[in-house]
Amino acid sequence: RAQALLAQHAVHLIILDDMMPGMTGTELCLQLKAEPRTHDIPILMHSAHERLHQPGYAERIGADGVLHKPCPPREIVARVQTFFEVKDAKQVG
Image (tube, rainbow, N blue to C red):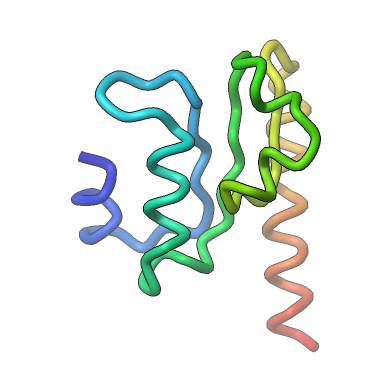
């Protein structure tokens, strides 16, 4: 389902929970980062799953960042803003 939505819409950032029905966020992250069409879309993993606390795990699956649950909404907003600030800076430079 997520991949069908990505084919229909312009997406600038993806936030995945690792514990999703049908497919884990890790599996989807690995698939998206392996596809040339979606490789460059930043992915934030947002989950309480313990494996996201393992050093280097996010990098191994290709995630661009991790938000550990629970986290306050302002932290989510701040992390999302950093991705758009980086993108804007690259476009200007």
